[in-house]
Length: 401
Image: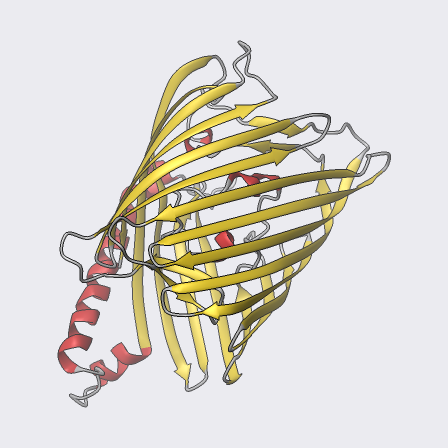
């Protein structure tokens, strides 16, 4: 047992308290900046420090209930859990140098999620080094605070960790121009090494009207896996309780057969017109076998349509080709968003699955969000009593400072 692995059941209260404390400091700093303008007009050292250092915090608390194929024997199960609790700090080291770090509780342990330094030698170019996530795919590049769904598309269960540092270190270069964004990086993921790139063309980058299309490619070597792939079918809670289960999309191979490398290709498209946003992504993963393991190919497709009854568009960052929260932070009564997503996952040996997700979110300012998702999943891998379909309801309360 690793004494340095923390359980959120023990440390969640501490994470919540720390996040709230940091959030309060961040809110106070923001209020001070609004009062004093740039924060340096009073000429104090404290003002200069607040200019150079930014504190932040995020809390996401989820509750989910689910049945059918989502549980071992088909009965309804439920889970309430801390999805993310983290604190962040960013610092301006010099005119063109930045550092940032994020520490949080996630996936049953406390982790340093981000710890990186970046340098901008000129406009439109950034070089980063440290613990940082690869840039792969559209929804993966969007902050998990502001994705339309409580969880991202289930297709990424086919390539887990594709857009995560996995506790390792990397080097990454990002570039952008008037109608494009591109990135490339090399990552040591504590054993496996990966080369990841993304390129996006943005011919229409208008204020409330955006069209972009792009592709991502990742090559990972040094894997040592049995090739088993499973999916939560869009409901995170199935791995938070003993009764929950994941559906197989590729069975494990027996020793000595293994998979030592893979190649993942993703394509993306997004079209925003006022309060409407359509996103489409598709991916394919090829696994290279050794010692008798057959080569494998799995793929997934995701289609998503979101609409704001409040009539507001989502923020779009053309420099990084990603979407943020809906506009209108100062809107009295907040703003609403509805979305529908359809995911199709194709595994090996005739195993396949699909997920329908219908959801709504209410945003209040730039800090508070409440979400509810109804999820319906179907799988060719039934549970112990033969259920191949199930339904889940998931709720989230979120605070971002």
